[in-house]
Amino acid sequence: MSEVLDRLTVLKHALGEGGLMFRNRATLEKHQGRLATGHLRWVAAHSPFTAQRFLDAGLGLSQWRELPPVGKAEMMAHFDQLNTAGLHLKDVLEIARRAEDTRDFTPTLPTPRGPVTVGLSSGTSGNAGAFVVSRAERLQWAGVVLRHLLPAFPLGLLKRQRVAFLLRADGGLYRSVGSGRLDFNFLDLLRPLDELAADLSAYGPTLLIGPPSVLRALLDAGATAQPERVVSVAEVLEDDDRAALERGFGPVVQVYQATEGLLGLPCRHGNLHLNEAHVHFDFEAVGDGHQRPILTDLRRTTQPMVRHRLDDLLVLADGCSCGLASRRVLRVAGRQDDALDLPGTLGRVKIWPDFLRGAMNRVPGLREYRVEQTGPAELRLLIQPLTPETRQEACAQVRRALERGGGDVARIQVTVQPLPAPSPGVKCRRVRRLWLCGEMGELP
Image (tube, rainbow, N blue to C red; front, side, top):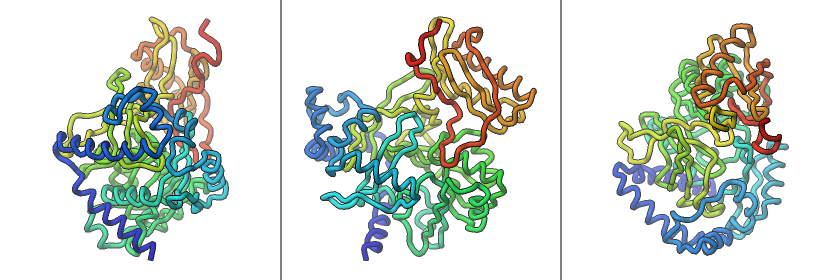
C-alpha cells in the first residue's frame, strides 16, 4: 500500500510541476519570495546552525539574501547542528560508506520524523560531501525529475519505459518513480565495462542516464541502444562527448545535480535551465563570464541549504526559445578547484579549465586526456594515444591556451605522459589542480 501511495505522490508532484514552469520573471521571483518566507522561518526554528548564522550576522530572516555565504567545508564541519533530523555526521558517513562498500544502497537512518536516505558525493571539487533526504523530499525530487526527463510527459506514461542508469551509487532516488510502466535498471559502475555494455544492449533502455565519460566508454566497448533520450549527469558535458553520444545513442540533455541538490533541468528544447522554481540563486562574478552560484534551496528541510556557495562555475545565457523565465545555463564550466594557479606575466594568474579543454579538443587524433597541475609552475599532460604527433600538438595547444589566459609560458614546465586506464566508479575530471597554493612552497 505504501508503494502505491508513494507513486501517487510522485505523480502528483510531477503534474504540479507543470504549474511551476514560469514564463514571466517577475512572477517567478514572487513565487520564490513566498516560498522563502515560510521556509526560512521553519528552518531557523529547527536548524541551530542556520539560526546562529543569522544571529552572528545581525540579520533578520527577511534579510536572508544579505547573509554571508558558507560552503561545503562549513556544512560538513557543522553538520550535526545544521540538519533538522537530529542526525550525527559520523552515523551518516558510516552507513553511506558501508553502502558503497557492500553495494547495498537500501539502508536508511531512522529519525523522529521518519527514515532518511543518505549518500556521499564523490568530491569532484576535492571536498567530499554527505547528503540526507527525507521520504517526502525524495518523492518530490522524483516527481520533478519525472516531469522534466520522461520523454513526452505525460503521454510517455502510457507506454512501458525502461530506464537504465549508470551511477557510482544507487541512492534509490530514481527508483521512487518505479511502477509497472516504469522499469529501472541500476548498472553498477564498478562492474567490468564489457559486462555493462552487454547488459545495456540487452536491456534496450528508452531513457539512459549516466556520466558522459562512462556512456562514451560503453559506446567504445560496443554497447548498442537507441534510447529516446540520454541524460548526462555527474560530470561536465563537453561538446565532443555530446556529439559522440548523439551519434551513438540519441538526443542528449543534461541534469545539473550535486550534494547541494537538484540545481538544473532540461527544457523541451533540450537546453539546461536552473531549477529556480525550487532553488534561489545569487551569483558572484569571477571573471571571463564565469559565475559562482550561491544557492538557497526553498524546499529542502532535512539538510537546509541557505546561502550556500558552490564550487562550480557557470556560464549563463540570455533567454531560451522555450519561453521559460528560469535562467539558461550555457555551460557548467568546471569546478572552482579545477582552475589552475600558474605564474603570469604580472604575478600569478588563474587559468580556467575551459581554456585547456578547448585546447585539447583541437589536438587531431586525441581520444582522451587529463591536464594536471602538479606544482607551482608544473603541468602534466596525460594523453591517449601518446604518439609523437599528439605529444607535439598537445604541448603546442596548451601553451597557446596558457598564453591566452595570461600565463608566462617561459616559466611553466609542461611534461607529457601516457594516460592510465581510469579507476572504476571515479568521476572524470579532465583538468585538475593537484598542487594547492601555499602547501608546496612558493615560486622561486
